[in-house]
Image 1 (tube, rainbow, N blue to C red):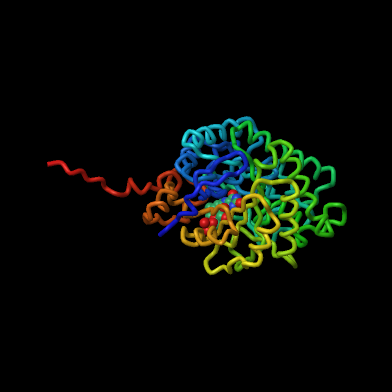
Image 2 (cartoon, rainbow, N blue to C red):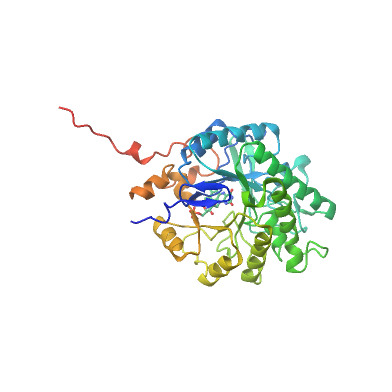
Length: 383
Ligand SMILES: Cc1cc2nc3c(=O)[nH]c(=O)nc-3n(C[C@H](O)[C@H](O)[C@H](O)COP(=O)(O)O)c2cc1C
């Protein structure tokens, strides 16, 4: 197969990326306990995947209340920053470029994960009905649970939260990240503010679409002031539809998702944000994003555009050829294939991903997926 476009370099802000293959944010729940601290094993995992032209860290919570799943790493304590520094050093040693995904789950959490056992915080006191949180039940053991009833944030608390995003961005730079991505997808805090279903506020942060986009606008401005807009991206799940109750992720199908997200993308455009990342539905047989939407995205946004969701090299190449995308992210294929770019370049077969080891655990199903060369026996021609 010809993967010419996927393998072609591209610029992203000040960075010259070696190819257009992206490691998207992938939660793996392997941070050290207590303290949710990135480990040497995580540094190894990321450095193994540094052949990607561009990498984004797994979601990293900006504050303790921003956590919805046990064992996910944070980026608010000195120990966490020191842990991330090991990750970024290892990636840079391999020539990689890595941004931190700044994450706050808002209402998709549980009192067991919240400081003092308090209620999770959200734009409105409405429960996340179709989402799950994950709590620890013993060392290395845990269960998925229904998120707890959240409480509504006050306007003063929203201002503090915007400040926490800016602080997390400073921490990311201190940890050696090349930039940051704001997680505004998958039904978490920023997505909750955007959603007319999760946000029923009647003050300046809710009601009209312009007001529901205010939190996004303020977070983008605060983070851009720290890192520079060209060194940041924002991730959305615009047309995310849920098909069953078992899924951890649920998106918010707005009454008019097309209009909602084109307006949201204009917020990024006005701020000069470096890239937009769109996570598409990722389960089998999910509908494709309408071409008309992709065109509207391209027209509304002049930065780089990344798509993720069930891409094969062939599908990714085809989308790049249309000119509607600049980079393609491969999630599960990258989990199982640390050398994915080399496999794509050479047409080598892919390892299959083991879903049982995706969330939590040890090096098994994490750093022990073999590179292609390791799976092929090398024979020499000696007499
Ligand atoms: C194990 C796992 C963890 C994920 N964690 C995150 C995350 O932390 N942040 C995020 O924005 N998306 C997350 N996603 C979504 C992926 O970034 C990506 O959009 C999705 O896997 C679709 O790509 P794929 O079909 O190539 O796997 C996760 C997906 C998987 C499978």
